[in-house]
Length: 238
Image 1: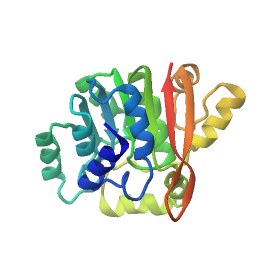
Image 2 (image 1 turned 90 degrees about the vertical axis):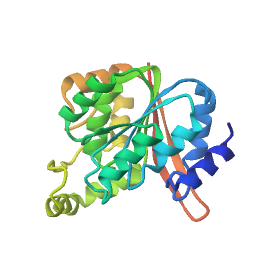
Image 3 (image 1 turned 135 degrees about the vertical axis):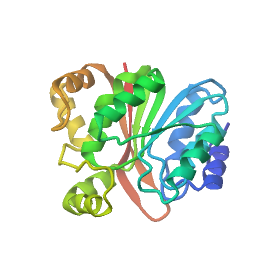
């Protein structure tokens, strides 16, 4: 299947990967290499209000298993959205990416051996780090871990008090964000020291990342009106 077909599916379901961002060109190349007709195991963290990306993946990767990890607290239609995704053929798990217990329970229920994991969830450095540290081992050898909207993560960390106050006001999720190293900073440190830098990860998690990253690449997010530098990162596991 072509980029055009993926774009049309993205527009059909209304994912911002096809509208606000330029990510689908990258994804089309990734899945062309992996094989769109193969049975892949895909996890995307974050469903938004409609689960648009998960529906797009289910239509684009017809033979693949699509998993969704999402707290659903923010959606006004959280119960109907979960059922809607289940009816669409997506395997759904309700959990918070900041909560290692939730991630552990998710992996116990659904196992590992993922071909691709996509983080399109909270867009905060601590959430990105915790999910990466906890989920990167569950990738297959050669599997890909993709993190979107890195500029938003930097911006939101600069407004961390505002973000946490919003969580408190809405009485959602119950875990406050803390400041952590951005993904870009972690990779700068990795290049210089071959060790992983993060305030929230355990030594075991940091050692695993430092020893098992095969390669990585940051991509710019390009539209007709702007270019957001290094807004998406693809990390390959050894």
